[in-house]
Length: 404
Image (cartoon, rainbow, N blue to C red):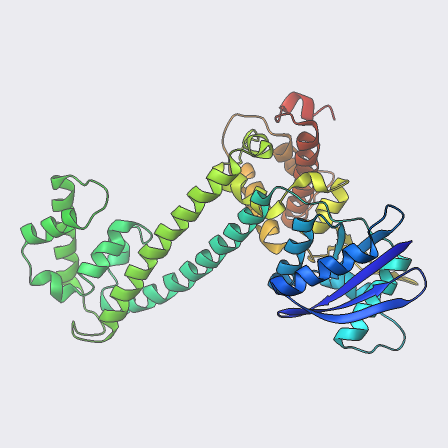
């Protein structure tokens, strides 16, 4: 007999319903604890001890809340189907809708029994770890962006000339900001003291002559600067704190990148991505992290839907809406791929790239596509190419690419 177990997942617990081919035979709450999971295992073992019984498990992916349940199924070797929230919502819709945990579990089970879905294909755990690191990387990137704005606002009040003398993302700039956030502090020191402080607080080796030149520029800028606040104003503390925090985040970002590289370099698709002109180490690592195991997809259309570049069409009677992309997929991966295509376009290398050529073909007569449309089309072509190469386990070859 075929059984279906459906779980409505919540924080720390799930509501389970168990159906045979006719009706619900069991329903209960399951807490996400070792004891409850062992009880669930014994329950499954009692019901499905022979080869004539089969068990299908289905639940909705609810982020961190469903992770303990999924880990239990993977560890014990149970096959399961995992719905994303949008898919679960569509499948559970009825004319009269009751929204509660128990009703959701029953709806999920009944929907699955009518519309059988494919079982989840587990991948190497490195993909899950890479995705977590990629999201952490994005969080740090967002925090850095906020800090840049705050640091800029404060420096404009204390010593605006600093942003003209140094590259604002460099460690040298951030060190100088912490030592001399106000021009009055520079004027209190001699050129030699300033030079020595620059040498002492610079992580990379800096020559004495270069440090002296920077000291000279700082003194000249300080003599002509008229800041909005004096050197005792509280904003000085803010500037120093923001600069120090920015450096810490940059260091963390580098550490995450190194860890992601260590996890990715052993995966076959990493070398394939690097074989594309215009895709560097950082981009390759981020694509693998966000895309996961590409072999789990059956075709490139599924990848487009996952990324969110599949076309949404709407037509009713004589009304025809302009085609747009769905944007329901992975927005972080969509951004990475967008930047990858931009990098390919701007790349002045003599290496031939059929993705780049395709973009310019769409932009030229007679197609005359706008920039964004051509970019999305190029992303689509890139994903199809990556999917094919990974499936065949071969590196990118321009001559072969233009013949397919």
